[in-house]
Image 1: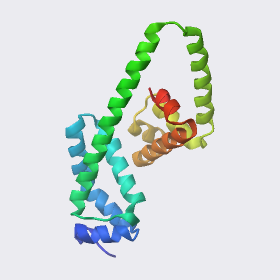
Image 2: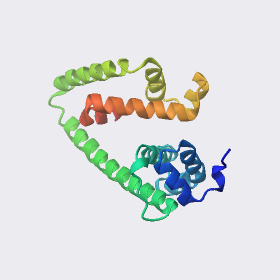
Image 3: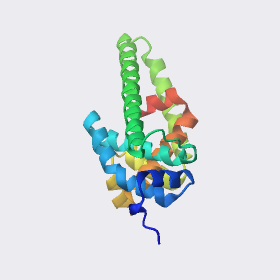
Image 4: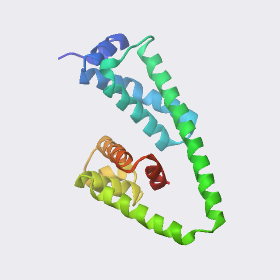
Length: 190
């Protein structure tokens, strides 16, 4: 059996480009902790840092065949992490402006009835899309988003790995985002 721990980063990157799952696992094991610490030091939020690192590794796997390294593997991963942090911060700024604009609208207090009707319709639309999720994904999503369980708590409750729970939550968010559209999805998350 081949010991992937003995491979250099360059060799692992080449194996990854051919779709080698064990090479991907070794890259994950080798860099996950350091990348998490790097992202956490920038954001100072554990969940957001975990999400960014998870997204980075998901992206690495989904795009492994198109991987073109112009630097070392670690350089590539840290650069990717930096861009994901920039995207996250940029998204937070947009989200903040959106929340402020909603706050100003609410202060106007002119259309409360219309607002309540639209909110009820929006909630019904969101609940229908959540109900359309596969049963296990829906259960995990509802535990995470409606009952505010952590990924670890859900994993223990359902007898799953924490990775599986994270993946299910991310997949359900992707499904809802595609079904509901970005504007409605953002309102739902808020």
